[in-house]
Image 1 (cartoon, rainbow, N blue to C red):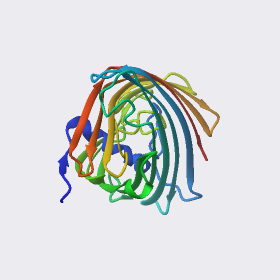
Image 2 (cartoon, one colour; image 1 turned 135 degrees about the vertical axis):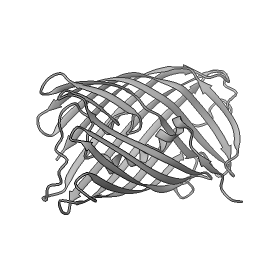
Image 3 (cartoon, helix red, strand yellow; image 1 turned 45 degrees about the horizontal axis):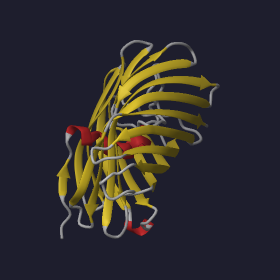
Image 4 (cartoon, rainbow, N blue to C red; image 1 turned 60 degrees about the vertical axis):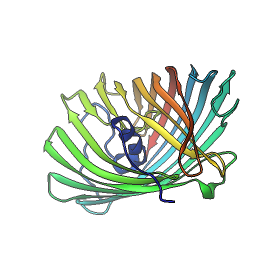
Length: 309
């Protein structure tokens, strides 16, 4: 049976961008000028560890859910010339869902722990001094404890171009497609980096943290080592529950961020925010919707410790 072909809604568009963080990780969203000119030399490497706690939110089907997440990311990039750069990305996400109360959604405990492994690469090429090309394939495995890794494959990639409109404004457009456990997803993508002033930046939040690279953030540098930000994004995760079912969770995180740069290598990001428009669903083995429920707004706290070498 052919897989359903889906074109994303505006909210769902952003979730697919979560697989693209490695492609643009060399442009961090912080309110200070960033030198993005490729430099020949040893590869750049970044590591990030992020614990996230999402407090209880009520489910429309009854009961409630809270989530503890641990996110680990490794990104590397290497400039082969002034025009050409390559990169790699590895991520492991662990999510521990705690359902409680008399929920009718998928039974008393529809799932427990969910694991996601992601491997990716990227190629960036400056077509002209103003135009750049990005190609970013991605391979993921996303499963609950009762499913095998071999049944949890998600794969795809994107192609995007960006243009330096001015020295302070870069815009980009692209297209991508992913095979996501019995669904084929096609989507456009939009990128923006706008240095409004020397201290104020509007950009996609390509930085470690619970928000992922999707969405938009307004950041302000308040000192040499401090900056603050506020933004909104979209997160979604589709994962294999067992041989017969597929689970999915999604939400719209909104946040405030306070960041501290510690020396040349380390950075600490503190987040406080709320996950809104939360949804949980279960599909059958063919990708057809079996049951779903919505969740109330849930506050969350997170810390992201990252290092660049």
